[in-house]
Image (cartoon, rainbow, N blue to C red; front, side, top):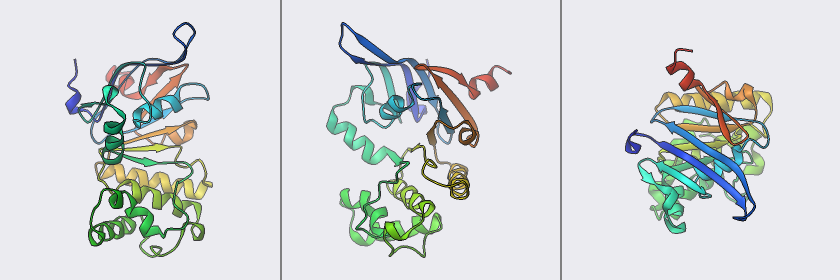
Length: 237
């Protein structure tokens, strides 16, 4: 049995059912998935494959019906709501399709928001936010508000915000879904760059072309792992 403390993600026989005990509706039907530190994995599948349900479990937004889920060594499947909230705020950096920026805040204020809620002093969180905005190429836009940015700049702001707490995992949900092809390529290039610095990234997408940007690709279908390029490489296929 693998050591969960050595993995960022370790899912074992994860199942998710909705409905009643008498009439259960299975959505995830026994997912085994391990992601080690520094991996960049795309999880792809068509509508109805279970991607959204798996995303919610990975992000500690929902619990599995059965199975074990270790996140950076912690068994989060058994945690209470308060503990899950702490995990979400400290261990996971979320990148959403719709950005989820606060419209009345400036770019730098949006980026430092997780540190504000963590009660980090203003001078420290402002310095951190500026450093991250420089890293994503937005050092010149710190005083602008989201409605003054392009879609690509909004996503870069969201990525900088996701990095503020130095999370164990970057979880990207359709990160190019609201972007044109030029901005999509730029965001994918930024994710590859972050992976190159050792970041662990899991990207959820319905688009096989987007998934091909990740070195490892996991395909879901009907609530099961249909294929995993890491397994294929390990088997010599």
